[in-house]
Image (cartoon, rainbow, N blue to C red):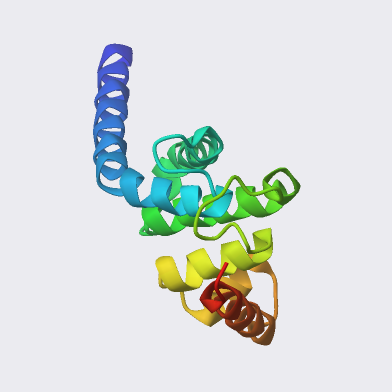
Length: 149
């Protein structure tokens, strides 16, 4: 009986690992780009973005068996945003890049709203802000980006 349980458990872990690897193969590129936009590091040389994504993916993997219909991409994006927001002081001095003139909050709102296409209400809930603050932050950020550098 124990051998059977161990075999079933091992099969479950292998299936979980395959499913997670497939998710990462399909989503990691876009998520890394989002992380790179947040950290303002140049593509291809983005160690902070890579570390941010790795931590978010590790958290997703830890919860993989408990997703119960939740979209793993949404969970990972939420982890990415939360981890960036918590460590925003480390990302305050931008490294260059298209969003480097924005504050960390403005970058986060722009990436969630305009790059990821997350609705204002969802962005507000994720960041713990009023919808109007998300809207005004996004508007202000876009205004800054439209100005010549």
